[in-house]
Amino acid sequence: MGADRDCSAEISARVAAASGERTALAIRAGGTRDFYGRAVDGEILDVAAHRGVVAWEPAELVLTARAGTPLAGIEALLESEGQMLAFEPPRFGAASTLGGAIAAAMSGPRRPYAGAARDFVLGVRCVNGRGELLGFGGQVMKNVAGYDVSRLMCGAFGTLGVLLDISLKVLPVPPCEITVEHACDAAQAIVTMNRTAGTPLPLSASSHDGERLRLRLSGTESAVRAAATTLGGEIVDDAAAYWKAVRDQTLAFFRAPGALWRLSLPPATPPLALGGEQFIEWGGALRWLRTARDAAVVRAAVSATGGHATLYRGGDAANAEVFHPLAPGLAQLHRRLKQAFDPEGILNPGRMYPWL
Image (cartoon, rainbow, N blue to C red; front, top):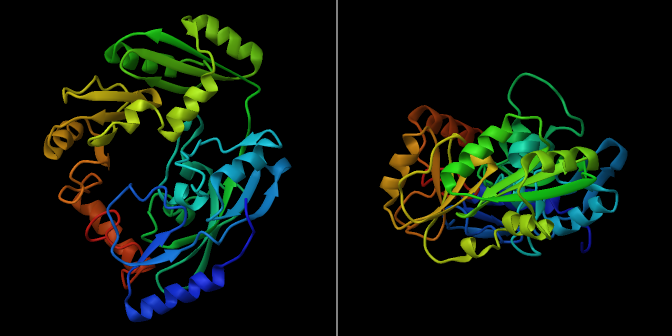
């Protein structure tokens, strides 16, 4: 995974100096997620050198690593002991890092069945907008009431702090996995996804590509084979490669030109009349949409279902909001958090919204 190095002091000093000079910083490590969110106009704060596994306790299912550590190296290390990052963070190349995955709150196909990225974050060390070193959480799963700052950093896109170290809960790799598929349209796929979600079947992933519904089953061999028999359909050969392509978004659908929308919807929502092509995941809760429809039209249709729409790639991101507009109360909460963690507004300013 490259040379381990603790750059905490250097990063802290750089942020403190930038705060004093009110100099905006664009936080960057692998750079593989630069496409996601709004462009940041600021000096590059490269944290890629801050890397290495700080602690790993296989028996405790806990790993702590620095933010610049490549995901590929972490996953290879865990695999050596039959463990995994259960939220299946997407990797957009060898340079994809743990810090980038957590900052963007990216989860893969297993997310609705095992949990989201933030569900596995036990604690973080970070640098706030004043250059102060802060620590939140720990290395054990706690059930406590109150505000969980460590998980707050998950999905903040570096606007509240520069991630340094992240402690995660890891899980054993399932001993058996089988994927079955059925030919059906999107409407039937959504019905089936929701029906199976309410059963004790050991589901761990679901997708529909416009023609075929695929359901992944994970667990003991006896349970998985019994579930596959119950579901019926065809067994998918080399399913591991397919789900990796879904996770890393290397399928042809994701590589096509034009605007790509990420729609978060109530899972049972019928297909929206927005035209274009779609790819469905997460039991119907995640819909990837390629359409030429105007952003306002897309967001109005999604809002009517109680969901939200993100302009994930392409499109007119310079003139349209990337993330779904926030309700006034929620926007005010974001502003208060930004003021508390980054009073000078120097950390990734504008990455999520023009005012954040």
